[in-house]
Structure formats: C-alpha cells, structure tokens
Image 1: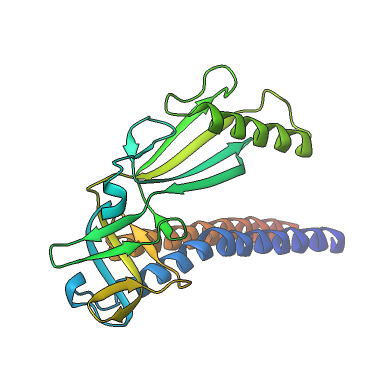
Image 2: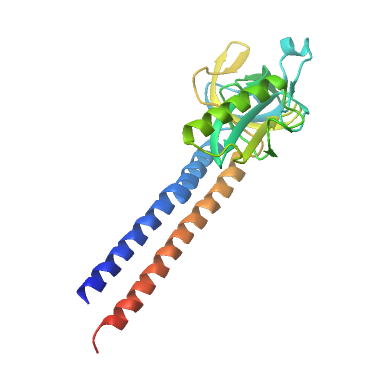
Length: 252
C-alpha cells in the first residue's frame, strides 16, 4: 500500500509539473505577448505631422519612399508571386524552423498630415496576413519563389536534415508574412523630432501591425486564459483520478 501511495504521489507530482510547463510555455508566452501589445496600445497616438519626441504610436497607409518610387521596383511575394513592399519568410521542416529571412524596401507611413520612414528590415512584424505553402522545393516550388531563393532554401533544408538526421522526404513548409503598398498599418516606436523632420529613433524597437494593438492584446489575452484553463483542467483531472484511487486502496 505504501508503495502504491508513493507511485500515485509521483504521478501527481509529474502531472503538476506538466501543468506548470503548459502554463509557462503556452499561456505564459501568450500572456507576455498580450501585455506587450497592451503596453503599446496605451501609448499616446497622434497624427504624424503632430508627433513629438517619446514613445508614440501612429497609423496610416504604407508606401514607397520618394527615392524608391523613382525606380518603381517592388519585391515579389515568395508564395503568391504578388508585388509587395516587405515580406518575412520562414522555412520549416518536420514542424521545426530551419531558415528565415526578411526582405524590405524603403517604406514610409502616411496619414495625410505627414509621413515617417519605417525601418522595416529590423521592425517587429505582427501580421495575420500569413500565407503558407507545403510541398517539395526541388520539383514544384511555390510560384513566386525565385531560382536564387529556391536554391538557398533547398540548401538550408538539406543542412537541417543532415544535422538532425531526418529523412530526405520530411515535409517542408514555407510561410510568408507580407506587406503590400497601400496597406493600413499600426506602428509603435520611439519618436525623435528634429526641426521639421520626424523619424523613429534608430536602434529602438519598432512594432508594425496590420491590426490595432488593442485587438492583438485582446486575442492574445484570451489565448492565455484558455491555456491556463486547459492546464488547470489537466491538473484537476489527474488529481481527481489519483484521489479516487487512493480512496479505494485505503482499508475500510
């Protein structure tokens, strides 16, 4: 009987550990993300032409900078082949990321009162416009994938497969977030004002979203609550089962 109790206590301890792990990994990450987005949402928002120095948020329509507009050259979306201003690509094999890259043109945000340059190559991109492709890169790559990028992805996939000792036939997925000209964006960053020019401070984090930050915070907060509820449900079920077993093993 003592041995059975030790085993049951061990099972309960393992279940509690698993529940804490679920909370920290699933709910914890979502909660941190929602709090981060909430912090961005409460920053003062002003028209671009009235921005002053400090942490600010703004919204407007994205487009090419004046210098880039003269060349009129846009990027090509790696999956759909449509023109875009910036994209963030992620290659996954066996459900694990093995390569990522970002390409971006000089972009500006305009709202009618002014414009501000967006550091898209380094900005944090929070977008729901996510397109994915799944298949064999060597024989049937996505329609928008250039030969040079295709070779780069194949090399990254092969190196990952060799390093992890996976099968050459492992599933491969290409996921892309993109920003097109004229898209409505919500931006938060550290603003520096110098005379008539307004810009975002270099070296400080800039967040770019295709949805208001309050909406992102709300969604991530709901995911965090769901993660916590799921973890507590697992713990309660395990504890209830263990309690019932202990009750049956007790002598009358």
